[in-house]
Length: 165
Image (cartoon, rainbow, N blue to C red; front, top):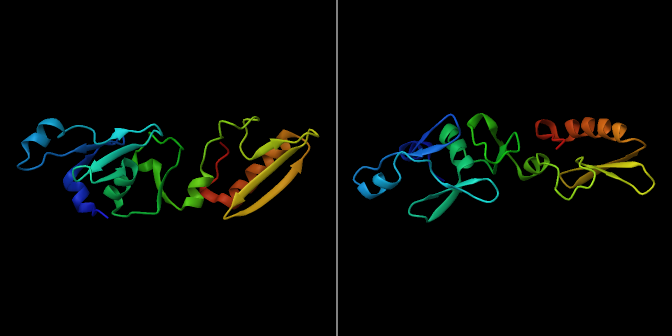
């Protein structure tokens, strides 16, 4: 991957979470169009993607920002607040795919609007939480009980990546 030093030659980082193209020596065309502008373009997912080396590779700005600061290229760079448009360094952390899956918003097709809980036909509430392919489940009488049990289990199983939605 690209070194921290190379990234710092190409970009400045602003505290608002944007990478800014630096001027390139001897490349007036690039400098006229791009130098001093925000690098990349926003995708439909909310992620900003930056094309490098004349478009030969495209990398998420959040990954570039993490590497710009640390020099590291973890498997996944997770947005702590689940907002893919918030690329400020303090909002980014290394993660595994499993960790990243834990830190997700409530799905749009969730009828109850509460993550990890669904209402059964008998009126009880079933909580299901998965981590590393293993599932824990419990059925409770009230939504309040289900939320309380879910929150405890999420913290236990997902740690800092626990997300209630």
